[in-house]
Length: 157
Image 1 (spheres, helix red, strand yellow):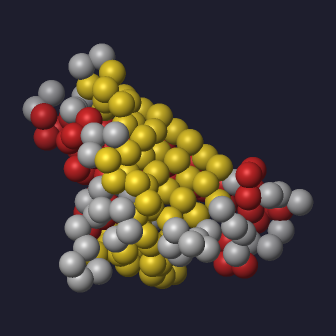
Image 2 (image 1 turned 45 degrees about the vertical axis):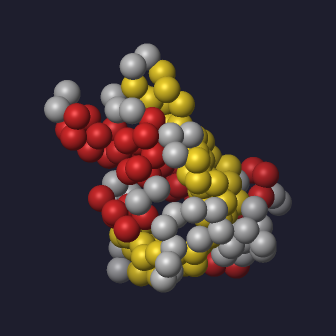
């Protein structure tokens, strides 16, 4: 049986932009749809600005299926890390994060996806959970490639 520890994906890419520019882009959940193949965007709760403890509603779409999730920011260190937990810090089921570090005049950004708790809509069989992990790996690559391209275009490189 697949365990949550086996449901983790991590990808790193080099971006020709400052750590602050990378952070500002990945922490802007309202524009996540510009780079994500699945998330179409999000809305901060009233008064939230993206600090630790803030909540937002994200909208996702795969094919004809659309759904919303409630997430809470668990890391917000500009130029270093941004992360949130779907379902909230207490009792959530997936942690998404971006680790950011200056490298060679630009930035290495690592996107992570970690299942904290398996919930029924993820899948009920090992095959379904493995397929979810593989789809997520593809989505992370696409998101990071789009992030790199967007920030490279913005810098005029």
